[in-house]
Image (cartoon, rainbow, N blue to C red; front, top):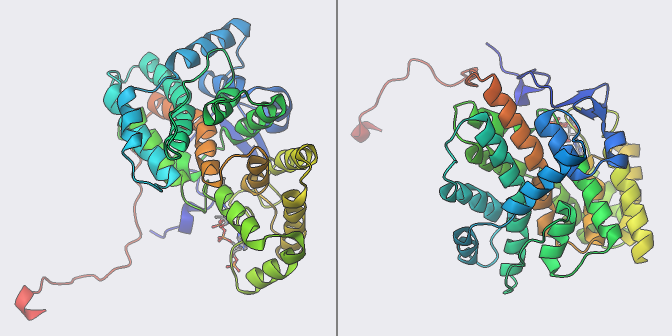
Length: 370
Ligand code: ACO
């Protein structure tokens, strides 16, 4: 038995949710480019869960359900108020999502209907939790979710307590579409491993949030912003990047395990970053990002991934840096829950083997002889 480091190239599950074939990403067979242009995030979530685009009445029913479940149990909000000042936003989200199970009587109901409804509840409540956390840490009361508006609209509204501009809603909605699912990425795999023990959906999503937090995965979008802030201005890009590459420092937001010729989601975020820069009258972050891309692609052949231009997009939307990865989770919970439902449908425990490289035939040594 020999191990493949990082399971590179290993096919570990069958799935009909999303595919990456020849560098093209599809959700249920529909090219991401088409969805980014035409679909709302709610349509995409429905597509991922039920395998088809919703008609008008199905979409209206989903909107009603999202409205119905967007309020989070008061005890979960009270719990967030007890988190320490300066708590890491992804650690806070992981804890709050885990605690949701305590207040859902159906958390261990394994019927398909119950699990489909829990997927909707999680989708509805995750934005409420992230916005509540963001306000509570600033000493403000959470803003109750609004009815009849999109998740993108509601999230921006709950964050600020003000009606968001249409352009901001549109940009966030498109970003949510682009992040919704991505085949067997690390967090989705974590979710599938967890629920393959027949543990509940809350456990699966909690595992996924833990995996998404790392800077090699979803945490990269925040790390990109840290880098942009460290660089500070366009004229410092070249020396910063040259120095980083010379010292073999990884440039956040570049490279991908599967895409070697570029991440198809990145171009949409780049366009959005440019448009928002023009609209806000501040092109600095966009221009810095383009310069970084030229240098990293030119010198290393590495292309930007989904996280790279997300950083300047979310900053233009005035979203605090440490909410970038929680926003990724707001979107990806649709994909995680779709994969969890799929795993339950044809489950087998996921239990690979390890290539043992430790000592053999070792003996127990009594404590006084060590
Ligand atoms: N900057 C500089 N060099 C890089 C980068 C990078 N961003 N990414 C890969 N490389 C180099 C590595 O140093 C390595 O070089 P070497 O062969 O000389 O040692 C080579 O490219 C292969 O890299 P690996 O890390 O082995 O590639 P792997 O497939 O394991 O990792 C990953 C993919 C984690 C995305 C990696 O490219 C990376 O760390 N990127 C930065 C973090 C990031 O943006 N993550 C978000 C990914 S998208 C997502 O999860 C939503």
